Length: 172
Image (cartoon, rainbow, N blue to C red; front, side, top):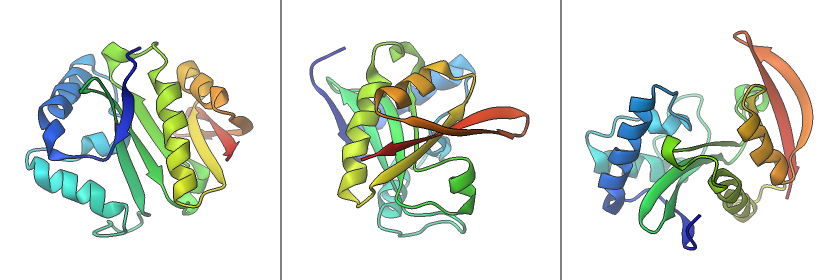
């Protein structure tokens, strides 16, 4: 892993890196996680404004809560993305939680997700959260290790659309 790894707010200057990451992800055939990677990026500036507005509650779609999106950058390369929801609604309290994250396929298994979650938990404290819910598919061993490496305690398991998922809490 590179030495200089930081979280940044979405910004136009990372357009090419973002599109490169998206292209790699789509070629892999894997689901884009966090879900904000599915936003239309044709008008990149508008997408960045939308993401950054949501952290202040501006332009939220119905049923959404305030959320902050960050990109993980290492030596100017976009490694992954993480969404922090500032509060939970009923759906997020069941499945979704406060945080969703993903690392681009070529950069996995290098410790980036554990580091990204650790950095994001600091951001959670800044917005006033004292306890964070994170969910993941039971079959996603990497994600469950990332969560437990950051202090996550397994609370429960449930089934959604045939998928067994786990609910972890991290106390900040």
